[in-house]
Amino acid sequence: MNKLTDAPIPFLDLVTPHLEIEEELVSVFRSVVKTAGFIGGPLLENFEKDFADFCGTQHCVGVASGTDALRFALMAAGVGPGQIVVTVPNTFIATTEAISQAGGVPDFVDIDESTYNVDPMKLREYIDTKCFVDRASGRPVHKEKNLVVSAVVPVHLYGQPADMDPILEMAEKYNLVVVEDACQAHGAEYFSKRGNSWKKAGSMGAAAAFSFYPGKNLGACGEAGAVTTDDPAIAARIRIIRDHGQPKKYYHDLEGYNGRLDAIQAGILQVKLKHLSSWNEKRRQCAAFYNEQLGKAPGVITPFAHPGTRPVYHLYVIRIENRDALQKYLADNGVATGLHYPVPLHLQNCYRTMNFTAGTFPATEMTAARTLSLPMGPTLDKSQVERVSRLICRFMAAN
Ligand SMILES: *Cc1c(COP(=O)(O)O)cnc(C)c1O
Image (cartoon, rainbow, N blue to C red; front, side):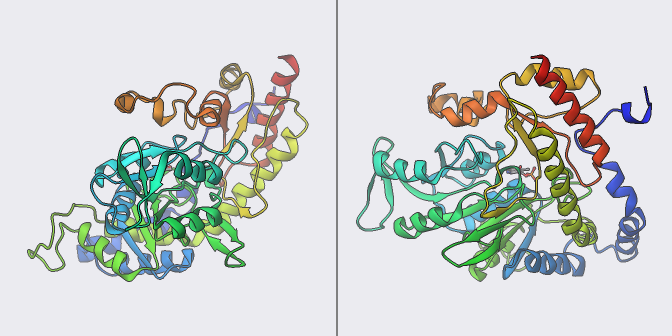
């Protein structure tokens, strides 16, 4: 057999995209070393400005990670201690960690099994059946927990925006803060019927969190994150929270965090931001090619891209009955895959005191058992997509 076509296919090739721009990345480091401007300064400010422009927002505040971005956004948007923040159980744990660490109480509604994102109907049902509305604040109050619901965190999972129009409508009606978890959706777009225009992920809520973890569509060479917002007060508060609560050195308005974005990482992100649109386009081409190849395979459910969205395919996720066996077959044939996520949050050990049982969120649980993330990335090529798809077709025909 041809050696080249039999080379292992990684789940994500992180090396090639960096080598292609190695000189530019190294020159960022060189320029910072010359000035020792490691914290703050023009590299940070320039990146913040460019990323805000990219997202179509007024402000961007660089922070140390996506988790910090979510936590600081929730704090700055006014989520108070003991208030419920509703999100989905089909997400990375950082979403709920940030809610708890901001003083909130995470609670869940199920996803839509076609998009894997929050189902707005289930959010409505949550408010209608589990809550009464407090006259004074206009906010829902959870009947059993007797806690106010103050915010919603829609997650734009796998790079596809959640259905924001109905969520924002409910948020207006019930005085809820919306913080987007856009950690997987840099550059994704949503067609807002309310605004009759395409909106970038990260520009629709009161604030949004981005992660620049190396494997994200826009990744640093280390840890990094950012909050985007149109609200100058939220941006100003996050600038203080990320820097020990000090508007001025050694003058502390509150107890904050060490949650700043390094100047070197900001400089690297600015270099990489110039490539983000073309990298996203390559991901879309790979997704289209997978769709074409796998459309023929019986029993394979390819990702449903809602026509009102332009996803950026952080992950390309298929659904099949015999998931674990297919994953093993692909591994045996040199193809690495991933599970996002194998255990829904409501069934994780750390949340056992929430007393959720299996069966509570059926769409999420079905997704956890049946989805498989295939190799995806800006340097994945057609022949690799073809080989992965051929293996899947062969497996499906035999099983
Ligand atoms: C990556 C990710 C985060 C957290 O980002 P970090 O930079 O790793 O802290 C949060 N939410 C989602 C959905 C993510 O994928």
